[in-house]
Image 1: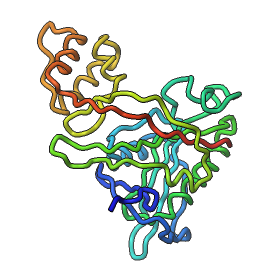
Image 2: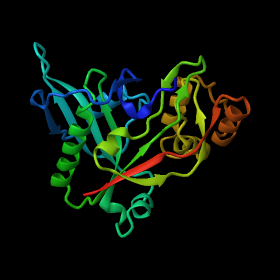
Image 3: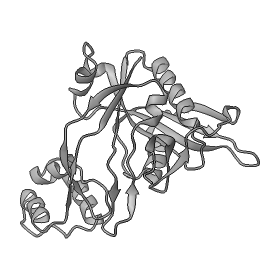
Length: 255
C-alpha cells in the first residue's frame, strides 16, 4: 500500500529524514520560540541535521527550544528566512511587491523527536516574529520538493515532501516552479548549478566549490585544466547522475 505523505510530518536527524504521524499532540508549555541574532547557532543546527548539509543566505533566523521532563532545554528546531534565489521570485509570486519586500522560508528543520503538531505552532510564531522584527517584509515564499533522492547504493536520503505544514499554517498554493534536470552527487545530494558555474568561469568562490566536489568523491582537477573543461570532464565521465525534476510546489504567505 502506498504511504500517504499528507498523513505524516517530516523530521530530521543527522541529515536523514524521518516522519511523525500527523495529529500528534504537542505541549507548548514546554517550548519557546526565540529569535537567533546571528548565523552561528542556526547554521550549525541546519548543516548538521538537514539532508542538504547546506545553509542559505539568511535574513532572519528563529529557534524552537524544548524542555522535556528531566532534561535540559535544547534547540529542537530552526526556521531560516533567506534571500530568494533571484530578484524575480517575489514579484512573480506576489504581484505588486518588490523583491526587497519578501523572503523565502529557506530552511524549516525540526528534530525527529518533536511531535507533529509542533510544526504549525512553531511556524506561526516564526512568521509573527519576522513580522515584528522586519515590518518591511510583506510576503514569504517556500518550496516543497516532492522528488525522492537516493545515494549510489540505493539508500533513500530524502523521501520528498508535499507541504503538509504549510497547508496547516494557512499558506496559499501559488503554483509550481519550472521543470529542470538536476545533477546528483554520489551521495544523492544535488550539485549546485551556481557552484558549477563558479568553477567553469573561475569566479570568486570557485576554490571552495571545487573542494566540495572533491570531498563528494570527484577526481581532482588536472594541472592546466580549465574550470570549464573540468566540469565537462565530470559530465562526460558520468560523475553526476541526471535526475529529471518536475519542479517544486510553491507556497506563500502575505504578512
